[in-house]
Length: 488
Image 1 (cartoon, helix red, strand yellow):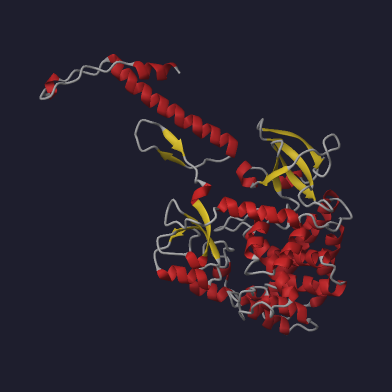
Image 2 (cartoon, rainbow, N blue to C red):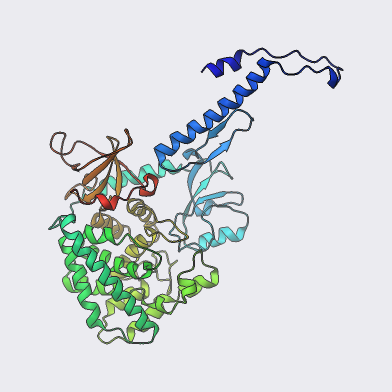
């Protein structure tokens, strides 16, 4: 740049000799003033250039920090993944910086997810919460030299998922587009039903199974036609309807899970009934706690932990309720390592359906946006649950659940090797890494494109010839992938 060359070669003014007073100082020469102005101009141009590039490429502002030396502009900094390491909880020491607690947000007792370990009590709380491994930031605290980096741990997980993805899945009867309208109606009706059930429970009224059973049947029929339609719609929740739609989601996911495991119709129905009613006990939790716009205190969390037993007691008063819904309601927060509640059951004592319910309950909870917690993408949530399955869940059940909903579930936004963004609309029967995608955006040209369906299982020239690079967060690109589930 002309300005840079001018600044580099500008001659300095006359140097003031030692002992010369202020009155002897020369005024800065024109060249000196030009050099100073040029340095400030280059700094400003550098900052705004970086800001504009990042704004356009990421869709949001990234973090910027001022360089240590003034007048050298601003430097964009990103956390080096080599600084993030995954360690066992037994290796924790004071002075380590926790970057990720490796658990769902309702499990740990801390206000923040990231903090510096400053007391032995914090380490004790982490272990008592059933957290077995964490991610530390060695740039902000003590290091563990031989620990794997977060990138290495994630790469190992992706390699293991490739093996899981090779198993066959159940083929859908109709397309997601055909089922969406019916699924939307079921979602609305089911949420209203759960709201009424909880209102009755709060007033001490008995739950009428005659009203609940037909809804479980409707959900089951939608799952049989195309599970992706209803499951993708149920990921959209607001603060007002979260509690009710969460119960509908757990019912839907549990029915789909049972179906993928070829369980008989009666067991599937009973599991769906348990899923729809599993949080009935939350009707007795005060609204100020249930809808609190922030993390819970220890005392408030103790109240929340009473809801499985409260729900069980409510359902016991319901005529003709079966043992499966009762078991799911009471034990959907139990964990294999004994860290769950209310009975701290361990491996070998938690029933099959209660373990399945625990998986889908966590999956739906961590993918939902709350006012104090940003939900994960469905693809990221599956990878987290897979990692946690070493201790909290049955690994075989988790793998079967991943095959049920897909490594990239319907409605997931993905980046393709070609640089196009798309939304998953259908899983492939024998390769979960090659689903059908509706592409709608070209990231290389930064423009929307005519939506089209790409079958990643097909070669070039036959509607395929591309590959998923990674899943993407819709908020990052400020788009709603649900608008592209159906190509007009």
